[in-house]
Image 1: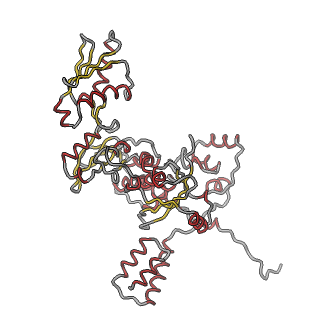
Image 2: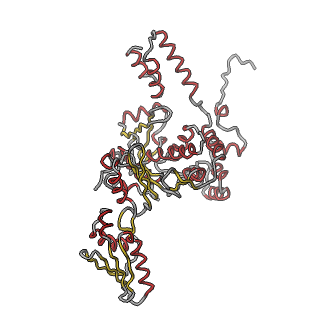
Image 3: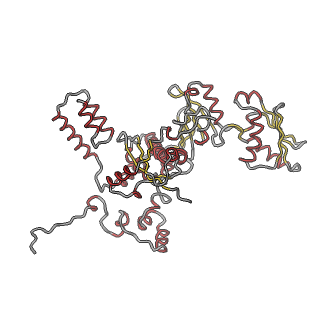
Amino acid sequence: MNSDMEQRIDTLDLPYRTREDLKASLAERDVTDGEFDLILEMVFSEYRKSRIEPCEAVGVVAAQSIGEPGTQMTMRTFHYAGVAEINVTLGLPRLIEIMDARREPSTPTMAVYLLNDWAFNRDRAREVSWQIEAAPLHEFGDITIDMENMQVLVMLNKAVCDRRKIGVEEILEAAPRKIREKRHFRDFEVEGDPKKVSITFTPKNRESYQNLFQLAEHVRHVIVQGIDDIERVVVRKEGGEYILYTEGSNLKDVFEVEGVDTSRTRSNNISEIADVLGIEAGRNAIIQEALSTLNEQGIGVDVRHIMLVADMMCMDGEVKQIGRHGIAGEKESVLSRAAFEVTVNHLLDAAIANEVDELNGVTENVIVGQPIQLGTGDVKLIAKPINLKI
Amino acid sequence: MGTSLDVLNHEMVPDHQIMDEEEVADLLATYHISLEQLPKMYHDDPAVKAIGGDVGNVIRITRDSRTAGRAEAYRLVVKRPKK
């Protein structure tokens, strides 16, 4: 093959991969111009055959192709993935979750990738994990309730603070602030002593023991280091580099942590991805999550069906669920909406709003008993009266 | 603190480009469609903000397709509707 032919291939109206494959398979061969033309002709005819035909009901085919294998999926909800004990929802419940576009998956997890300086050193990877994993105050020292003086005493353990790379001053500042902001408990006074590494909490109401114990509970569980939503972090070595797997997801805050690779880190929360990285990333997330859920169960579904579903879900700029509150609920036709769910409500609302059904879709035409506009039903024949003698 | 986030660098975000008016006219002519028939994306979408797109722009998205290798898609930037 000469460079002239290569240029001709580049200008062809064929998908990128087909062109590259064609170039690769012809690269080492001697082909004459005549043979080349013949090859192109055959490639084009094959390509035309492989394309979906006009008026083909791709949505129905996609629904069947995902639905039928879906019946074979296990109903088992919980599964421990790999060696690290991170619990993730898999199987049918996960697939339903993806299609329903839930704001929050039942088991949100993230895979946090690290930059080069952190990814190959276990201790440095651990440092990043401390910045991410939510750590309550009781992990940093002893908390005692002084009932005589009506106080909650916190004696910080300097060694633990040093190991987890957090200064005593930071804790002194963060603990009372977080109790007020995140736990919405304000009736206390605080006194910190950086020299003795202790903090004293005193409730405003000094008469009530209940109040004191309530305060102690808040002090014990206030998150002073890490990101609130991330309950657990597991460091795992994969392909030579350390990756952090988390229970709980908060992409936005994790991206701000030093050492995190902001180009590879991902979450299994699709709507979070769509919010932080944009709708196109959301579309990719739907495809990847759905495909990996199906493949994990040993079910092979062609990616085209899933791509169609993902395209429909992301059509309007935000992730919409497949169902009453999303795609099916926003259809133009009244009859089509009524045929799906909550029939009476839709008919009633449509009657009140004086809606008109244009009968363009499939469902509504089946309901009224007309040919549907699909396949041969979409083609109209007009006869030209030539030599017609009546 | 930390590394700054550039959404366009993330591996899940495909290439976004603002199309000029001529390209948009060509696009609409090839597919015999009106502007409103294009898929949408919101003006506050992180990727739109990163490339400086505004309401009314058409964005060309070059996706890594699993079937075609590389595929182009187009989205019209619209204002996010108020809830």
